[in-house]
Image (spheres, chains in turn red, blue):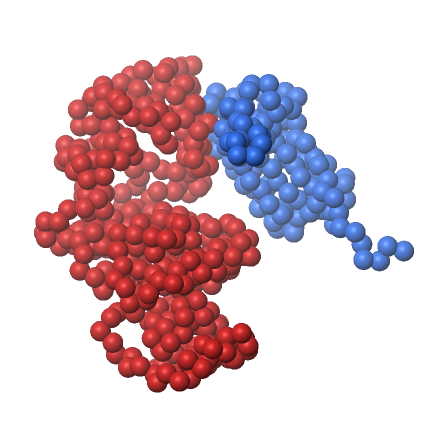
Length: 381
Length: 135
């Protein structure tokens, strides 16, 4: 049994423990301990019923922990007194865990960490490495998060919007550490989509699949960022694209549009173009209009300006920037790009160099610096 | 083994020999520079001397406590004259001479015209740990 299959069982096993009377924090710890034992003890052949095995071992770990802690005697009595409830309850434990770990009382960083551990089954060390913080720091973040949600009732229906926001954050973290957070976010969103019937869950899943499909083309051999227009479209993963498009179409057909569906529709239109020239910019602008209407987000309006620049020309794109705060991330890069398209190479070179200085990450900084260098070389003749 | 911090400055260090801003380099020169930096870190990982390396954005602010109940004072983006750190690398090496040798190699990273930048890097020793047996 491989580790990822094992990890899929984690939320359901935590749910069983909670239903038997364990509190969430203790249940979560016990399941992590059981997981460690499983990874160590199941080298080749796994038990016939891996979930049953995990429940048994985790429950034993939980009882051990309770007994070891004298101050928890009261809870021990409670646990021993209560008969084991029926496991086949109507509520989906895994779904409940998603809600709990993305509870609105948690900060986004805490919700992300807790979700990756309790729903994703990752170890604290793996999460710490993925987010480039010391393990002790991440352990602290997770235990504080558990304390925060300790009074939340496990069977309360939650808000799927907050869950989606957490999963989107995990996806965007992407590529650092030894855990592929983008792939993990897709796995967790897929699992969520299988349990809910909401269009926006499908929208987010489609968005992730369509973005992920382009990943092999996004980074060049020398580690540099390859912009969409220059990507080798032959490297795009067509299987993921068609899955993403299918998921999106099924969601759109139900006519309850949301921001993730709109974003996915834009990415799908890019994916649909065999060459950059075939891109349907007019339709992309229409989807951006929807997105702006739904979110009123300045980021959406910034991206819309780029699309307008392609559909109606760079001057129209520059005009579409009116009213946006120039300190918005990537604003400078967009202005530089539109000026270059407009033929004003001198301004574009200056703005690219300026944008490089305020770039939010190193690949983008290097990319913008190269754009400045390219134009400056052109100006030197 | 002793740890050293190699500090690279955007400003505040004496000017490099080959002091041309990166946006005036050719794209190939930028690639060669990036490659050199990556190879350097990878090589130190290979020799077991690499500890950490980070690059910092040039945008920063000075902040000062201004007393109980008052918001902190900020001194806007760094003024042009102020020292500005671009990034660092921490190495763990046998000797001081080795630290100097590596800083020299890092300073030789290629810049404009493919020639070494000869930029000034600051080498700062970490305080060591007190040995358990001092006699």
